[in-house]
Image (cartoon, rainbow, N blue to C red; front, side, top):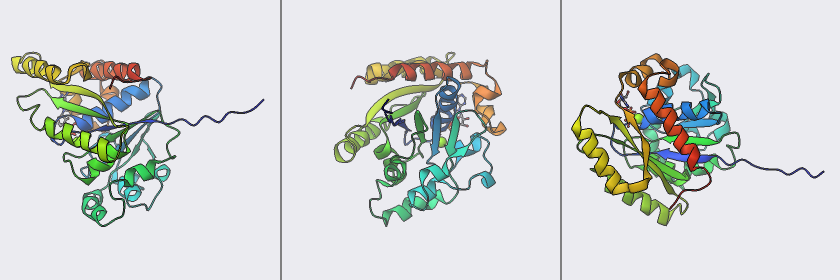
Length: 266
Ligand code: ADP
Ligand code: MG
């Protein structure tokens, strides 16, 4: 019998929006946990110098031995930075405070836009999904994420200015696709912090669906106090309160993403 070597290539999804506070980190942590709960092997890469994804997963500074900074600088292999979270099938490449300097330091390096892609090449066969939690800016860190990724997921907060700045993000994605990464797709748009008692949420959701059409997930993440409490316990909301509306929404979102496997419409 001939043994056939099948290398698994994970789907790399950058979670990006240059606005802060729209739910990028919350989506990274909770979507990752929901995917892991369904049996997928998931890695979160914390690309935000704030390190909120690492903290929200309960990682102390001491537990962040090899970090995103180290792999961007080429000082460590991605594999060496993969840190267990204690949650089955979910690992993280954590961010430390040094990542704040990376944006400037990278400017001096060769192939500064490709550092993450180079670090990940052939390294991540143990994962089905890699979610990259981007910082709230379209600088070199986010650019590295978009160039390493197969697709971008954009969380949009259901508030008045939701679509402001989105055209800039879409242009950036188009530019990255043309110049650096032709395979980059939009994985989907996820509406976050939806408040059904507020008409504005409904109006914003309708606007976003007009603009992005079928790219917008059916699942809408509700504004839910349990979601905002969970990070202070160092836990994803699914482990903090599985039954709450927030946990259930992220499980539904994971279901939609798994359904997308095997091809997205361009
Ligand atoms: P970003 O990473 O885009 O800056 P975060 O995910 O950190 O945004 O979310 C910003 C704040 O809003 C955090 O305090 C988070 O706990 C809270 N938050 C995010 N999503 C929800 C939600 N669905 N319901 C309630 N609070 C939320
Ligand atoms: Mg964040």
